[in-house]
Length: 415
Image (cartoon, rainbow, N blue to C red; front, side, top):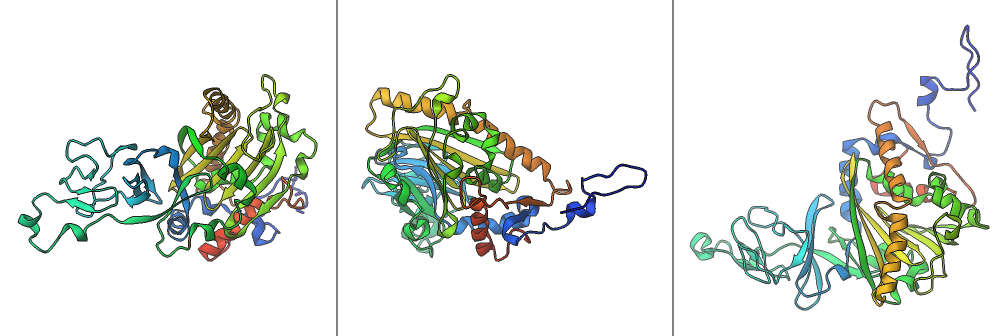
């Protein structure tokens, strides 16, 4: 511990000098990080190559593509535009949304159905507006205007199809993709992390009822950290009133898995403890009434199941200073109209744009980024709480940065 400092002509003080502030914490490298990992553009670029472009990530839910030829496009996925399409054979495929001719973005709408023809192309095809090249829902190039006249035999449709990206549907019907052709199957990546949530996610088909996205002025890791530690429940009055005051709250166990994934075990929330709120009568298969459990998937996805509704958040890093967060709320596909209305209400009172929790998390992570700009004086962030792997233990943060260090080749405390 630092001793009090006596300055001539003044009272002793317990605050720190610049030298003391900048000294490395007397902790293991696993228990703190250097703030440069949130601000250095070179580190961010390296993360995109070594982490994001080599991981499996969910990009949408299968219920967003209910019919043949439905599609969803993402403006950027690990700095890469992609489009997800359900073919006429009902198979969901993902492609780089880039024309192999002159690198124009092909599909421009965020969602739709290829059965509706665009002015520059035919129905059932993805058409590049630049020169009219067309591609079907399997990625084949099916039309090159004046192909023979211009290219003779040097270029042909068979050699200029779209690049297909590996795609799997799993874990509650989400569409997972990876840009790495050499990555193992999704099951190798997620391992047994989803086992404790499998009955809730996979017993009955799920359906999306809420979509929201936020462009947040912060580093992506700061946002994900708020999902991986619960010491910050002190931030949320709703969580303090309905969760922290309940018997057994501080005994809730944290579990870490291979590949940087982590889960917080089941707890029961007393919603009636919050003025104007009431218990949740709806659940998911296998989930007790008013139950709550959460799973965080490296490097940037969170499944949070609060009895009646599932929220899945997925990050898309834009730069070291900005991240796109997509939030989806889901219920059971078999819901009645009244049940769906109740799930939406339950979801939005906590996580909606005017809910009780989300805005507080978004505010904090942006304030963190303001406080640690280069030159601000920020140096180290502590992740040193140890409470026998219970809810306020920061083991979830340490497990994240253990995986980060493995992929980056150095600890986050000395980047």
